[in-house]
Amino acid sequence: QSVLTQPPSVSGAPGQRVTISCTGNNFNIGAGYNVHWYQQVPGTAPKLLIYDDSSRPSGVPDRFSGSKSGTSASLAITGLQAEDEADYYCQSYDSSLSGSVFGTGTQVTVL
Amino acid sequence: QVQLQESGPGLVKPSETLSLTCAVSGGSISSDYWSWIRQPAGRGLEWIGRTYISGSTNYNPSLKSRVTMSVDTSKNQFSLRLRTVTAADAAVYYCARGRSPHTSFDSWGQGTLVTVSS
Image (cartoon, rainbow over all chains, first blue to last red; front, side):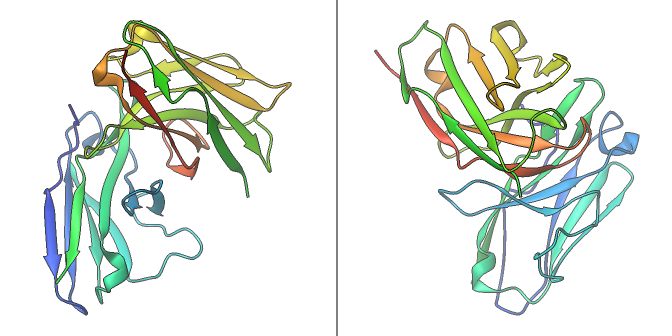
């Protein structure tokens, strides 16, 4: 049911760079609504990682960065670390639903 | 830093009503937007809806016919009622804060597991 599509999984070796895509449409990302990213370690609540496309809350390492173009957004993790193993979700607003929408989620594995 | 804590029955019978409350501490509920989000086991996040102090609400269209949300300023808490539950409603339910309808959820409760079973 998610209107934002993410790859199910991505993986990388420690120190590498990985990216996660989030594809929407002209009612959400393409309409200019901000994209936000969350990190969820299994068994815990999601944690805000990136807000308003590319801003980091206090305490989030600058290894995490976000970008947006057209109907898609991306989260990049540089210098991948073992502690980055988690599920990642994008989120935006959808005008056709008049509400928030989440991505399908991506599991990041550190090899 | 605002903190949120969900509470309510962990077990609900099919066809009955799920009722949860989210207590807000460290800040006033009289500002900001308050949402409920759920996550079935092994699956992704689903936004259920949001409420505001004014009484305005927005619900996920897929759940709108069964959902009611409200704010209790005297107790600094907000609530969720989901009617006529089925097994598909079993999930971890989170409450969360958004500064506006379009923004991120910057504070989350720890989540509460709701099982639907007779």
